Length: 306
Image (cartoon, rainbow, N blue to C red; front, side, top):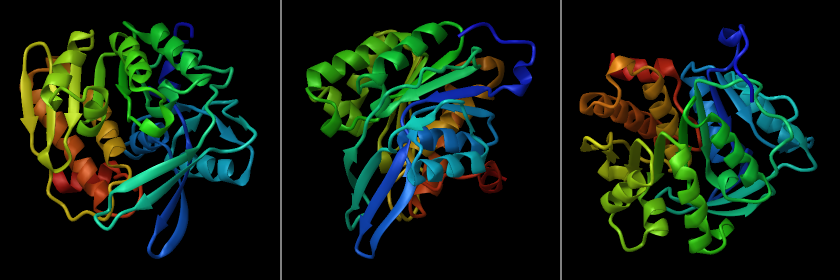
């Protein structure tokens, strides 16, 4: 990527890089299909929060690819040119348990298109399968290397064990990426898989020690844990009735990014972190309260705060 042109204000403030796919959801009432994929959900969530967002991904020229494109573009996501060129659109088959939790199986190929943003965004977000799965993972790493130290870089590994091979290999890839980031967000389940002998707090301290500025560990109903060099805080979750958990972490991530973009000049002060985490928890609560990855709009968030 090159330096931003004079028309930067017309270009997306945030670029998200990662997989987009179709969630095939099995419930007791039958099978439904919805556009999904963690990075795609984050891009969608950011656009719903009125953040100008570009998306670098790989989807097919098939009807499922058209559905993904329509879903994201309809929310205001700018899908970068060349992204809809794969032979087919990947799928994730989700089976919902009685408590609303989802388990997944995948039919996924990830190869980053030979296009990239021609400018440095204010913030680059990367995540999930795309950061681990060859051949596209190397392109994601190159993009992070190019933006590190210039753009704010956020990363959510969103661990999917069935796609990652050995734990050692996945942890090595993850730990190679962390020093290129400013913020790492992961769930307590992600942390437990990567570091089975550490508590979520110990895992966060270890990850912070690898070279990122802020580590956020989400813990479902137990809230979230945030760690910087100066502070450690725990912020409670927002109570809600759970329809399902699809998209909860992505809603949290999108609202976290919005908070980082709008935090003002006080950096990562404890009260700033608490405010950001409360808003992110609210976004997650709204999402789990309704079926699927139906992430909240800025108006919905403002209505609850106001």
